[in-house]
Amino acid sequence: MSLFRKTETRSVDPSAFVTDSGWSDNGGMTQDRLLSIAPAYSAIKLISETIATLPLHAYRKTADGRRQALPLPAWLADPIDGSTTVDFIQRGVVSALTHGNAWGLKSGFGTAGEPTGVQWLNPARVIVDESGVMPRFYVSGREVDRSRLVHIPAVVVPGSLVGISPIRAFAVTLGSAETAQLASRDWARNRQVPGLEIEYKGGKLTDEQADAVSARARSKIRNGEPFVHGSDWGLNVMTIPAGDAAFLESMKGNATTVASIFNIPPEMVGGTTGASLTYNTVEGQTDWLLMFTLRSWVSKFEAAFFRLMPQPQYVKFNVDAFKRVDTRTRYSVYQTARQIGMRSINELRALEDLEPIEGGDDFAPLASTPAPAPTEGVAP
Image (cartoon, rainbow, N blue to C red; front, side, top):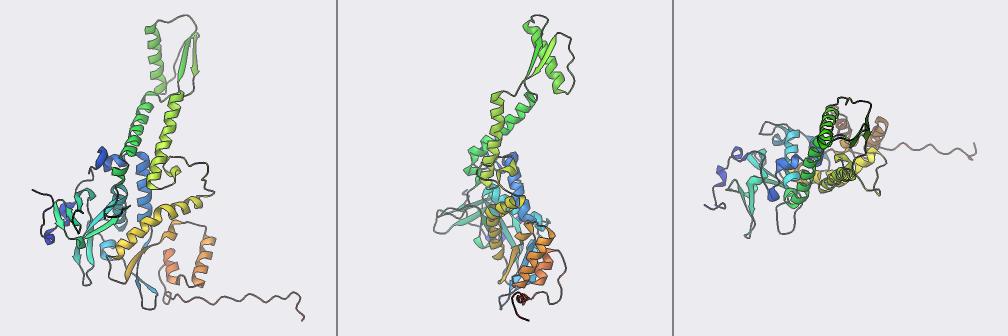
C-alpha cells in the first residue's frame, strides 16, 4: 500500500502521532545519538532553555496603534499535553534544532478559527510530498490538510518548504564528534594518569618481572593508592605523550565545530574562539548570543504563533529580560523608555513582575524637564 494515500483529514487524532524520540535520519545519526554528544547537547539545551524561559506576553493592536496586554491563548498557557508553557516552547525549539523542522497539529477551533490546542508531532513521522504542483502532507502515513499543521522550519532552500536537518546535513561531522567522545572515554579508562617511568636500580629485570611491576603500579596509582617499593626503585612522572596531547586538543576542535553548526560561542560548549574574536565582558558575549543566535529563532516562533491567534492579536518574547544589568542602569533605561513613549508604565512594571496599575497603559511621551538656563556671564 502506498504511503501517499488520501484519507479523511477530520479523522486525524493528535495522540495517534506521538511516538518515541528515537527517530532515525540519514548517516546512521539519530536524535538520541545527537543529544549524547556533549557539545551538541549543551548547544541545544542552551538555545532551547533560553528561549523557553524568556517572558512571553500576548497583546492586541488597537486602532490608534497602541498595544493592549492580553492573557496568553489557551493552547499556549495550558498545552493540551499537560505540560507547561516553558516545556511546550522548548519542545518546539528542540525539534527545530535537531531535525530542522518543528511540526504541530491543531485541535479544536474557536469562533475566530483559532485553535484551542496545539500538540507537537514527532518530525520523523511527518512527510511532505513536493512532487506535485501543491505539496501534500502526511503524518504517520495519513494525509493531513495543511491548515491543520503548524510548521516552523530552520534553514530552507528555494523550491522546498522543509527545513534542512542538521542530522542529515552534518551526519559525518557529528559522527566524528561522537567517535572522538567515545575515544576520549576509552583514553580516560586506559590513560587516566600521566606516563610513568619506573626504574629498578638494583639490576636487570626479566620481561615477566617488568610486566608484573608495571601491572601492580598501574593498578595502585589508578585506584589512588600509594605504590610501595624498596630503596632500589625510582619513579619518574613523564609528560603526556604528544599523540595524546594532540588528541585532547582535537576534542576542543570538535566542540568548536559543533558550536558553529548551532551558531553559538564555542566557549559555551567547551570549544575555543579564534584570537581575532574576544569578549570584553559577559554582557558582550550575551549580546552576541542574542544578536546572532536567539534573534532568528525568536522571530520564527513569534511569526508562527501570530498565525495561530485571532487578528490583530500576537505574542512577543521579552528578549530584554535576557540581558541582566545592574539596578541603576536598568531603571535609567526604563525612565528613558517611558519618557519618549516607547513603553508604558504597566509594561515596565511587568518587566519587574509587578501588578499593573490603573491608567498605566498610556504610551504618550512625557514632557521633558527643561534644563536650567545658564547664569554665567548674564547681568543681574
